Structure formats: structure tokens, C-alpha cells
Image (spheres, rainbow, N blue to C red):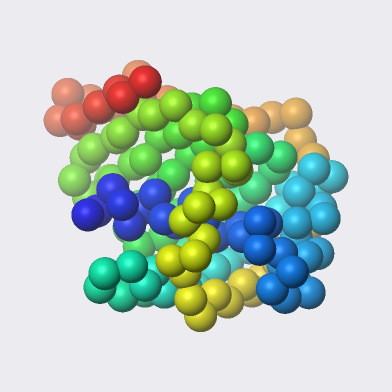
Length: 144
């Protein structure tokens, strides 16, 4: 369940449903031209409702989500789901932002605030997670 919840954090840039609000349309239109930073707050409504909130950074097919004690890094090809409290990392093959579309229907009460449009950067290190720096107390599960 914990992995399911954190993977749902990735859906918070609902570009596929951009017609839902002018703010989402503006975000979607700038995905390839800007690095976008924002704060999100929403409810995941599948089975038992769960409130999610945190920060999201997106550039092209890359994203980083932090919230509810979890972190997700995606460089468009690989996704690292990190649970610092449990000292666990799941490494999976990613399909960039396209993989998020199907999960959007399970969100309600989406609120996006603190939107900042930043210049694109060639430095994509913010979207990668280096598991080689972890000590032996961490569990790294590579599912690729």
C-alpha cells in the first residue's frame, strides 16, 4: 500500500486532464519549455481516501516529488521511489510522464499553489537518485 500511495504522488502534474482548469492548461503548455516547481495538495480516493501534499519539480519527462515522508525521482527512463524512514529504495523502469495518466482519475480536490516557471537546465541531477552512496542499512530493490 505504501508504494501505491507514493507512486500516486507522481500523478500530480495532471497534464492529461489539462482541460479541467486554466491553471492546469498553463502548466501543460509549458512542460517542454520550462522547469516547473509547485506545491500540491489532493486526495487519492481509491479504496480508503488518503490526503497527499508536497512539492513537485518537473522538466520535460523528468520529475521529482517530495511529500508525505516519501521521495520520487524520475529521469524519464528510471524511477527511484525512496522511503527515508524505512530506509528503502525501489528502482523501476519508467516511461516518463506518460505513465501517470491512468492514475489521475483516482485524485480529487487537487490544489496547486506556489507555481514557479524556471529556465530549463541541462543539469538533470535533481531527477536522479544515487543509491551507491547508501550504507548497508538501506534496502535497494531493483525491479528493472
